[in-house]
Amino acid sequence: MPVFPIKRLRRLRETQKIRELMQETTLRPNNLIYPIFVQENLHDKVSVLSMPDIERLSITNVMNEINEIENLNIPAIMLFGIPSHKDKNGTSAFDQNGIIQKTITEIKKCYKNIIVISDVCLCQYTTSGHCGLINNDCIDNDLSIKTLAKIAVSQAEAGADIVSPSAMMDGQVSAIRQELDESGFTNTGIMSHSAKHSSSFYSPFRDIAECAPKFGDRKSYQVLFTNPNESIREVEMDINEGTDIIMIKPALAYLDLIYRPKNISRFASWRRS
Image (cartoon, rainbow, N blue to C red; front, side):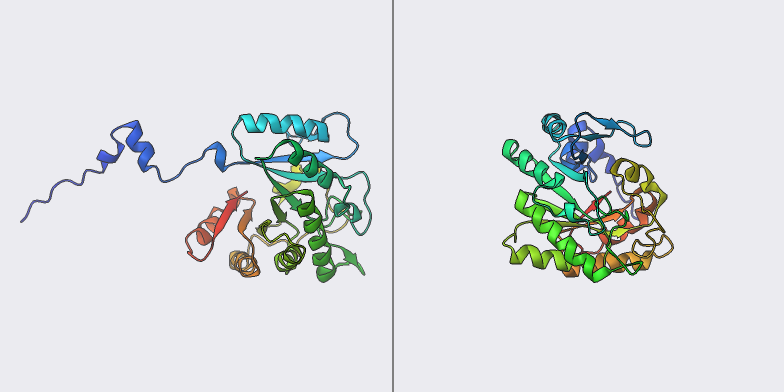
């Protein structure tokens, strides 16, 4: 019988430099997005017990925070707004003088290189606390996506590099892409919360963003954990509608779903969250 030479895979582990050269998975500061919660008419930082070390900030605080973020070589931030005024239509979400719009404008005046991603949703801005608009005690999907598109355009006008729809309304990516393009923002990217699952993991976020629903729950629009195939359909739909980056959320409980689109070549850029 022929004697085959030993397959010496250890050659590629011999030194630190070789290991770094051959490393398949990396996690570096330039892979990170830093979340920032900015609150209107706030004069000092506000802490929330359920989310230690994450605080609501004023616009002034945000500017100081970004200076530190840049020093850490983190390239991007994601902004979530907490307005002073809420109403049933979430009008402060697309106000040119809204908290997110003012914050983006101030950031872009001082920090040209930071990537600004803005959350596009209604839950922080509506009296209902839901991600869509209420009509006859139900979420009105088609009315909601029109409003989400207005929010996205207002954020792009302020200078957002990427808008991030998180409401899980059917057709939201298509509506936002069309409105952005028609408004001249063809280079503004979309990072969609494509498969956002109904989960108690969001409880700390709802505390800090003051966006818990005032009635019912979000199971009529967020994906159920029992339906992985439906989650993949949501991802495919967003890609077909023109999203640039997909997100599966929350990440830790859904690593199987993250794996599936990652290994399908037609699925483009994607982001864990």
